[in-house]
Length: 233
Image 1 (cartoon, rainbow, N blue to C red):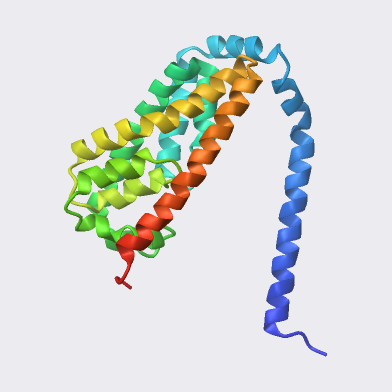
Image 2: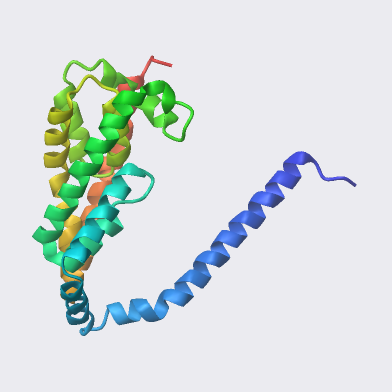
């Protein structure tokens, strides 16, 4: 008896899911020695020695990764911010991350504004552009952009692309988005610095608080978008 197209597709998805789970388990097993080493008291001094040995090149490398993370919006920013905090402390990491956000956001904003909406509608950003369509006509645009960047859980890097299509001037956007990012970034760099200092309880506390705030932010964002887009289908 021949299998239907639906059954074949379902079987293919099952194999793909099983392969991804197996890959994740193997990756965790391979990284286990590294994870154990990171929890040792010697890890912090070792990391600090490596950072000092890299000098300015370490700063430039981290800055480059932060800029890349903004440009390629699907790359999560938290690992970069955690690494920045572990390498350069809570406030040093904050300064580096904000500078990277500023430079990366300016680049993306200018490219999007030059290319226009049509160049991005058929990409993976198309759905997000549609969800935030209201920003192009919003009267209280500056306050809303600041709010969206301030609350945890919003897709802040994708919002750079969205805001590039709005009437908001580049300078105002960079000022609002950079200032509003500070609470989110400082919690990540603080967690990274605490972990590097082997202050595991503080690190866990920061993760717990930011996780709860992030869930609240995601809930708020969904409610807010649903209200703004109601009746616009």
